[in-house]
Length: 219
Picture 1: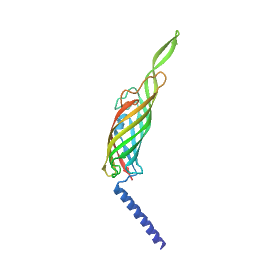
Picture 2: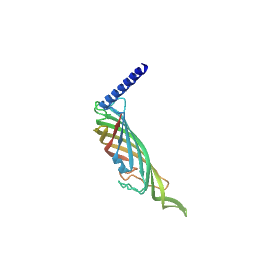
Picture 3: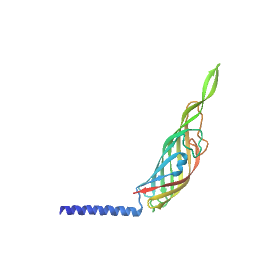
């Protein structure tokens, strides 16, 4: 008799869990989303976004860890200047608010936030060395291999549209603008700046943001 009661309890719990899962799936409420940003590969960067819903379903938190890597033997798609190898990492955090409060993780949204990154670029270039001769100071330019460290602080404001193109598979199209402050940490005698344009690693100024994210939702 006791075994029968235990079986009934187990079956009841299973039914309740299954029903809860089914209702949740029907409502499309997800625990989080994992999104990739494919265009970042052109900048020698791998970026994975983790979208997390907050207490209210239309407000989300987006965490974006990033990893930069390039060896000398690899092609540089955007033709960055004056470096051989690249290594770096960073983390961005964004608040994301959907205009519609009915569709969980879908529709038009506004997003804002910022982050920090640090990059190490190894290069073969010239260093200026100071020396004294006949009580006069001279500078001599000599070839050298050295590293340049770049600290970057970024802020962005974005609007986009996120849609479910297949069950559990999402696409996000977005545009916006940002501002970046880059600080170069050069060795003595080096004046190289990676600030030739908005795509360069040491760029300081405003820039356009646009692209797509692709990923899956997990419940």
